Amino acid sequence: MEEYWVIDFLPVLVPADGVGQYFAVEEYLRSSEEGKEIYERFVRLLLKLNCYDDLCVTSGEDDEPVINPEPAQLADLVRACRKPGYGLCMRTGSAAVITLNSEDLYMTLYEPDDDLLRLMGMLCASEGLFLRKMPAETDETKNGV
Image 1 (cartoon, one colour):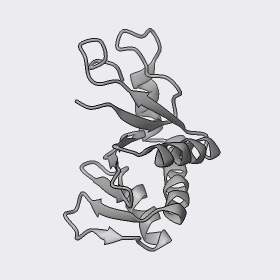
Image 2 (cartoon, helix red, strand yellow; image 1 turned 135 degrees about the vertical axis):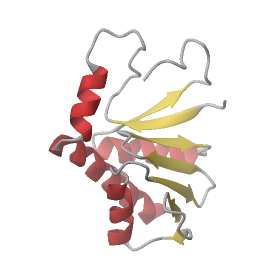
Image 3 (cartoon, helix red, strand yellow; image 1 turned 90 degrees about the horizontal axis):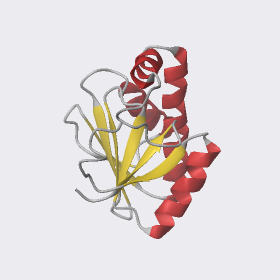
Image 4 (cartoon, helix red, strand yellow; image 1 turned 45 degrees about the vertical axis):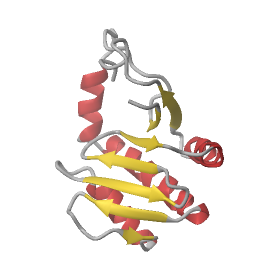
């Protein structure tokens, strides 16, 4: 698997054998107002990104791809990802791909160029999110969360 980047509310990968309460916190956030706020950060980040780059959005509903959806439509599509079984795949003008899957508290960024990485780093910081590079999957990393 190639390396990729995660857009997350946590700054560092939680070790698979960590002593904290990652899964309890994750479950709490999925069903709370605080979890809705994470999705609102995703909405604002993607709206900001769409100011700089085209977005081609495909939802988990097998809809036709939408190029540069209206801001309210993009926001609704992102918010819908809180529902089980729903997801989004967004391709940027630079051919990078961003995914958000049902109930996840992070987005994944694949194949960004250097300019997009710099921009995403700034946009993530503006929303209190973290952009972190994930290594290619190895036995040590495949069980981390």
